[in-house]
Amino acid sequence: MKRLFALTALSAAALTLVACGQPAEKTAEVVDATVAPGTVQVADAWCRPTPNGAKAGGCYLTLTAGSDDRLVSVSTALAQSAEVHEMKMENGVMSMAHLHDGLPLPAGTPVELKPGGNHIMLMGLREPLVDGRIASFTLTFEKAGPISVHAAIKQPPVVDSEE
Ligand SMILES: [Cu+2]
Image (cartoon, rainbow, N blue to C red):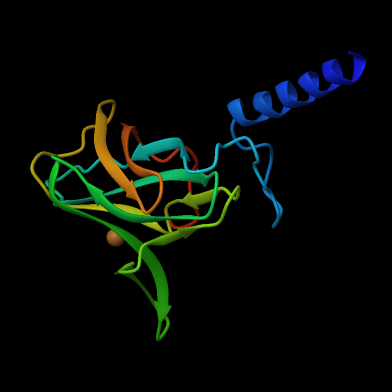
């Protein structure tokens, strides 16, 4: 009886940690065992507003797969197309490229898509992304299948060094 109670308290503590978002800065090996195998947890989804008629917009989120998985595609009614992009340095110039093989998600490891790094790109926006609204898109994973995401359209939460 006592042991059972201790276990329950422990998993409750783990859940609380997850619910509160990032517990400080991650070290290399943070393994989140609370996500069920075959599913992917989506957290902190947001998109950057596109003022001035920009035709492309970036969206960011944190993905944690319960078992090894891969983000293979993105679709949305908001734009003509959507892709998973990576940022890479080429000849001293930062550029972005479509991840043709998708984004690998190792089991239990949060994978962060963030400004200056991997991101979801909505291209050929039919309407601008307006601060305060919601952007909906669907992520398709190799094993977990399609997952709908409703992302807050907002300015970046912290001032990034790139800004
Ligand atoms: Cu991009």
